[in-house]
Length: 298
Image (cartoon, rainbow, N blue to C red; front, top):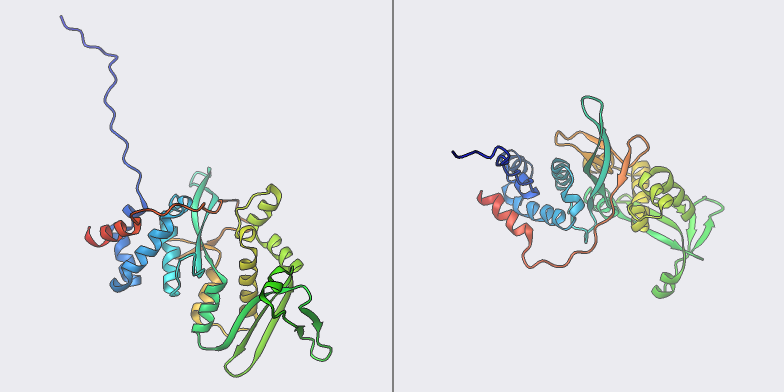
């Protein structure tokens, strides 16, 4: 008489493969949203750019996909590029602490929309209000103090490039000129900028305390200083187009699928910054090409 082995384990159903970013964007709901906001003509360029950004950053690829798409669509609506080489805007991964409906805490990776200083300048120039707008670092010996009559800051710039580059940065200058000739400038010392970064960026404070290099303030201090100066200058003294107002309002925020937004790098929200991605070797086949094919042919 045959005896059935009751200890033989039951066959288990294999786990469903984890959804990739490409799987997410080819869903009909997401495709329709991209078509509606970007248009069929620009969809290929948009998909190529955003998939390239995600595939080059493993931490970004593990963020909630809706925050990646929402941030990228905001950048697209401002006609800015996510290319790191252009520096218009960045999608920055963050770990934030949240609570579920039962009050239990959990960590979630999200993508923060972060405008670069070149993005601010692009938007200002495009508004057609400005004849000139720029920001630069001030080196030792270049600052001459304030004019005794007007109180304006005075500078004498070093003309030799190599000599200037070798000097210590002591401050930052931003200025603009309207088409009607009105000009405005602001100047911050390097100490003031350091104090600003420490006060307003939890990620930067964490880097200083733990000797890490997660925050852009740590890895790209001058770029963040330039952005701060341009933002301060425009928001206080500049004429702002609708695009500039939107950029200033949503800069440094996590954009939700419903277009709500939440600021994460501040004292109100527990945050664990994520390290910048390491340089990756050039791939023979660009994953963006496959994503574009799947997006348009599925």
